[in-house]
Length: 539
Image 1 (cartoon, rainbow, N blue to C red):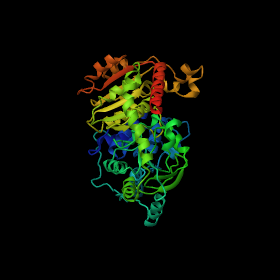
Image 2 (cartoon, rainbow, N blue to C red; image 1 turned 180 degrees about the vertical axis):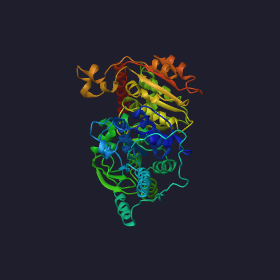
Image 3 (cartoon, helix red, strand yellow; image 1 turned 60 degrees about the vertical axis):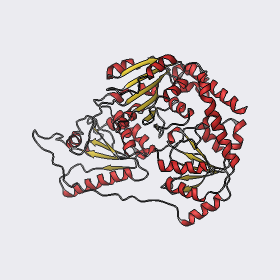
Image 4 (cartoon, rainbow, N blue to C red; image 1 turned 90 degrees about the vertical axis):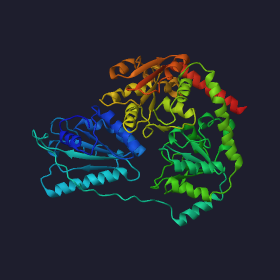
């Protein structure tokens, strides 16, 4: 709930309902990302309530993120009656369908409830909206609600909630290919020898993990896993960003069949590598929608990944062992060399983050901001914790808030790994009155948007520092004091070790560990690590 007058009837109804847990978050942009972080973990829609006008527009970044991440949200925007829109009246914009294609559906409630049919209509709309938000693929749904004065009840007036509200139960159903389609797939499998499975972003799934590990254990397929896939194991490939793009070692790695499932992948080098192959591509998704990420799509497979990979284990025959071993040889080589190479580097965010990750509790969750933070995490290989990142739109907005939302759903430690630009951009994530004792923040502060030093276009421009890196002098110390967080800042390995000694001990308040580094030095370190790993692999 975000405060406002036009939305007061909604706010009071939610706040007074005995079975609904409500929170108030003043900043609508933060509120929406906090709701997203909650819904992501709960796998249930979380409702958002705001007043009319630009308040609704502040939800938009999180709405778009929820749409592309397939996270259920129920967006309730208070509005003026239609006759007052565009009449120079206060707090009015064109709110119906304001989120366009970034919601699964847009609904408009009647502006009065004086007739029983209007009450029935409103009930029907809300049922449809909630069901639509959870139906595969899940996503945000918008209900615009015109409200007339008076907004507030009289003193002593009670709210009476229906004992048995009308509910349309949505029955779950399964989608799977026909027997005829499976025969065609099996016939195609008989002529492939190099199967590469790409796991996109998703929640952890023990059943899927076992099915994929079984395929890898029998050397039937190579399983490539980004850190956000949450399906990494000792049998999957996670260091691929260290060698893909290196023509000297990539030639024997080309598949003849790509099978993908889940949402986006982080690795640009993986996408470029696969676009240059001549492989067929099957994408597995329950609704059968086309996702042609690698420009090689030949089949949409309408099935759940669990169903399909169980079938694949039973129907995929012997594969090219050299193909499998080539991928796993490189994986083991990088796993062996990377930590040694990092230890020999100067102190910077790459090696500092590697050391921090050794201290993150196994039974916890990692939220990671976009830009360099998530790329470092991906380069550093397999994680046992659930990794969460806003890769639907891949923006830096809302990283803090999404992590805060996660802390509201679990007692486990939630570690936010973020760069300075994302962190300060979303500082209002902490502007509320709710405890977050399980939140830990690792802030990589190089006082700039360091990723632009690594991109060929901006790094070669004289305007780099002012207009791309946007150098800034902020530290988190004042923010920590303002919000009552524990805070420490480190500038070398010794200080980092000391600060991490009690970083994950129980606390009444969140903790911030700020790692101060140099943007130019970080770029040099990353380049040096890449060159040393490349040289090692080629030898």
